[in-house]
Image (cartoon, rainbow, N blue to C red):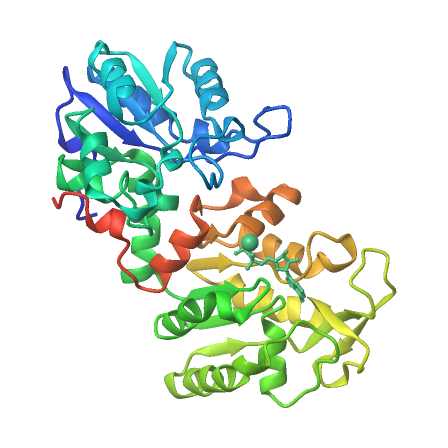
Length: 394
Ligand code: ADP
Ligand code: MG
């Protein structure tokens, strides 16, 4: 990796602003229902503390629209972090200004301070330079361990680096290592699986992957647009008619570049979008006018699994069907098994794809689960992420 990390700096006696992604799911009572994102930052935090730093943690939570709102407070997150770290985590009721400055000034080496929700200030998302300078004033160094927000040029991610030296934390380093290898130097055969609801969400990724992979497998709702592009009727399926010409182009592009593009040959259809709807398996040229395709069929699953069997690099983003309903989860499960059992370096991104893997208990068989859905997609599109570009070069 060509970016400096926390291994490259000395932190003794330094105040370190660490941008973390603590946008965790929380129930109505304020209980954190999944703390993966918090525990994932512990190696970075512990390392910095061991090196003699004091930590000032910045994060966002939810989508507050009009300034401070108690339901979007990070205070419960600070409490939870404290129990995970096994040490006190102080809390500042604002992320900039006198309250934050006094709390940061008072920090001793080895102490941790969590700032209130960065997005209580609209300047955060506007990348306002005065606000960024206010954050920078709290610390001597900036560390970015929030890959999932690094595709956005926000003040705590990008703006702050204009005022402080900035390096990657361990989580960020891991993301850049795995995704970077897939983008620049993948071991072959390199097979990508793209699914999920809509083509329009992932056009850029599909187009870029087509220039890199040996095989591209397309399933999920977006496959319907490709099925339509082949001239078949898709009935009442989720389809994007305005994207059919693009799907045709991508099919042609795959042909000229010699990339194996695998589309479903059969699908599971139902007349209702419901878990208990009667369903049947049909070939893609036999979808009835009242039917909708909600999963890839067994022949498609088998073909996809075969394409994955000898892959050396696999990138997967997007479920193969409506996996939330058991009747339409089989394609996703089958592909998850194939990815999990392959010898490939496997990289999975996307909130729903990761949820699907967890549902079938295969998440720990994946080489790298990317924490940032949108950020990992942009990375795979070949885009430069502003939060990454802003880190110091090696
Ligand atoms: P990810 O979060 O992994 O990037 P997406 O958000 O793009 O994935 O897509 C996931 C959603 O797509 C799921 O809610 C799933 O139910 C839906 N989906 C998958 N296949 C279909 C389909 N054939 N018809 C309608 N929705 C689908
Ligand atoms: Mg999703």
